[in-house]
Structures are given as C-alpha cells and as structure tokens.
Image (cartoon, rainbow, N blue to C red; front, side):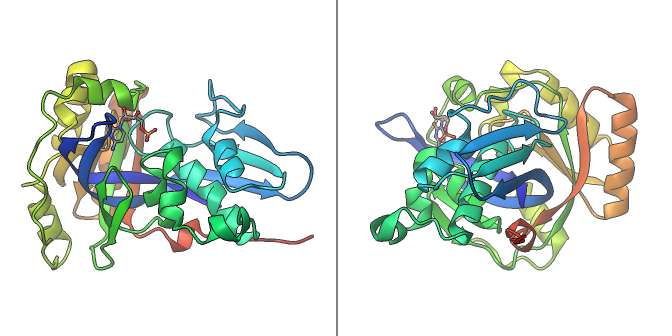
Length: 292
Ligand code: C5P
C-alpha cells in the first residue's frame, strides 16, 4: 500500500498546552508521492526497510511501523517498507508509514479487541504522533487541536506542486523550541468555498506557516530552496511544509511544475526534488490485499 506524503499548505500555531504540545490550525493535503508498505501475514512481527531513503533508519521496535503494529495489537506478520520520502523532513514520512500499517492491520481484521475498536481511530493512534490521525485517511482536512481535530475539506481543488528538501534532516521538537511566539492568529473560522485552483492559491498567500521562520534560522538552506521555487517560471506560491525542511511550490500546470523540477534539480543535484499532485489521495492509499 502507498503511504502518501502529507503537506501543510498552512500551519498556524495558535497556542501551547501545559504539556508542551502546541495548538495548530492547518490545512493539510496529500501528495501522489510517498513510501510503500507491504505486509505478509504469518511469523513473528518484523520490519525490513529498503528504498533510496532507507539509510540510517531504525528497523527496530522504536520504528513507527512496529509501534503502530503493537498499538493495533497485530498478531505477528512481516512488514517491508520502501522508504522514498526523506526522513525528518516535514512531510510526515514516519506518520504516513505508521498510518499505513494501521490501515492494513484494520483491513486484515486486527482490532485490539471490541473495546479498542470502539474508540475513534484518530484518538486511538494519536499517541504515535500528532500527524498520525491525519495520515489515516489521506484526504484534505483542516487539522486543529494538536492534530486530532480533523474537519474534512472534500471540495478543496487539487494542486500541481514541486516538493524540495535541501537534504538537511530537521527534528520537529528542535523547530518548536526555536519558535519565538506560540500565540498566533488562527485561520478564519470559516474557510471560503474555493472556486478553483487560482482562488485557493490567492487565499493561501494570506495564510502562513508559523514554523517557517524558526526552521529558517536553524537551516538557512531553506531560504535557498524557497528562492529557487519563487524564481521558477509559473510558480504561484512557495512555502515550507510542517516543521521543514521540505518546501512546496504551487504551479498552475503539471507541465510547468515538471519543467521547474527538472531545472532546479539540474542546478542542485544534491537536493531531493519531485514534481507531484496535491489533494485527495485516499483511493491511492487503500490496501490492496492478495491471497496466495
Ligand atoms: O507528536 P510528534 O511525535 O510528531 O511530535 C514531536 C514533537 O513535536 C513533540 O514532542 C513536540 O515537541 C512537538 N509538537 C508540538 N505540538 C504539536 C506536534 C508536535 O509541540 N502539535
């Protein structure tokens, strides 16, 4: 099954709880790029990791896939993860993998008992990470609370984008610690009915990612990424996703996104650069089950 990347089109930090977690107001969509997770029934619980971004990633019990399997009370089975998304990059790679593990286990009938099954999955799997609930469905949502209050945005127009990571891993807690002000304005209480892509992009220009400045102070290369996107022909808006360092550029057409990605990649061969579609990736994220 696919584990699509999560993109925060906006990320307003509106407060801080006593336990240190921050309150968010974020418009989240999914990309048609992501990791792949395979699960084979039988044997003890195990995980192996392959793929271009596998380097240095722990396959032990601390890996979010295995932690998700434990929380879902999986009865063994082998997970194979193809890691395509850069690690610690603000596009929810680990959360997407954990959510994919939950999806396949629930589809295979794991429930953790009637009591656990009765609990809303968003609340049940929140302890794995604040981004896990949103990654369970892979649909456009407004995300609030610390990540557990999800309001579907089914009519959000799809977007053409380029994702770029300057190949600097950035730990989320470090960025939050650098944040100068936690009490910022939320998005408007009611979001507009977007009449197409251009309308959405022009509205997004008035919104923010409140972690961008903090991340920029830690990783100046984020500024180079944003400048490269802003300088690309056809780029309508460039912004950082999540706690960074991955940034997205929005384009009017798939072709201009593809051309921009190729040009930027030529100039910065060490960056992770990928053209993509953003929007509803629920269909793409469903487990395909084969029995042999
Ligand atoms: O929940 P997750 O493991 O993704 O969070 C990692 C860290 O990011 C937390 O320990 C916290 O420091 C910070 N965080 C936060 N507020 C959120 C989400 C994450 O302060 N809503």
